[in-house]
Structures are given as C-alpha cells and as structure tokens.
Image (cartoon, rainbow, N blue to C red; front, side, top):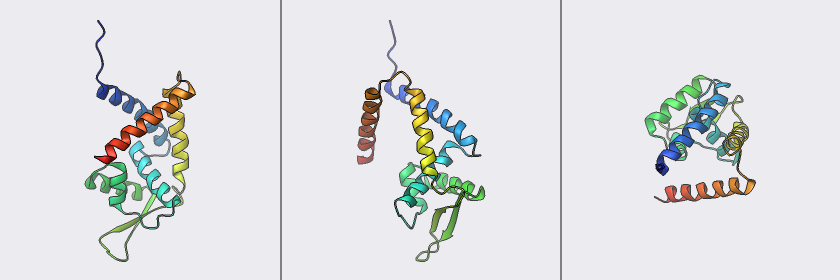
Length: 146
C-alpha cells in the first residue's frame, strides 16, 4: 500500500529543490538566493517608478522579519549591491536603492526563475505548466488575504 505524502511535505521538497538551483545561480554572483530575491524586489520597485524604498517595504514583500531583513540589507550594502541613505523626512528611516552593480537585476532573476521552473517541470505540457502557475497564484492570493 502506497503512503500518501502530505501536501506540506511536497511543497517543502519542491521549495528545497528550487532554492538549491537558485542558490547555485546566485552563488555565481557571490550571493544567496534570499539576497538575490531582495535585490530583485528593489530592482522591480525601482523599475515601477517607486522613488522611496524602505526596509519595511521589503519585509512585507519578502515575508521576512525586521532583524532578518536588517542583516540581508547590511550584507548587500557591504558587497556593493545596495545603497542606503537616511530619508529626509525621518532620518531614522533609510531609503534603499540599487547600485550600478544591481540595477535592473530583476530581469536576470526572472530569466533564472523561468529556467529553473522549466527544469523542474521538464515533463509538463505547456498547458500543465500554465495551470500550475495559475493555481500557485491562487494560493498566494489566499495567503495575502489572511
């Protein structure tokens, strides 16, 4: 008799496999996949015309705690990928911007993400792959509405 694997375990295994492959790509740039994701968020916001990006914006987008995001930003700034300057209104807040080294990096990340997804979905039809993305979008929508 086959044992049914819990859905949460399936998601965890998929996440580990996806993250491992993204980590390998990020390592080529001297980064972790989490750092690369944060850089992607900053780059995407800048591309959309957002002029003031704050740490709490990134915490909300990435679903990361304040202390964890503080460490990520400090490491990315030390590596020359981000620049943090005090906000003019409230000098306790810092405005986070990409440096020339990471400007537009979200486009590179999108390509890497699509490449890894294609590897993991190698035996899917195009329709199955679209359905997977549609269903995961619905799950994310449910999470965001909580």
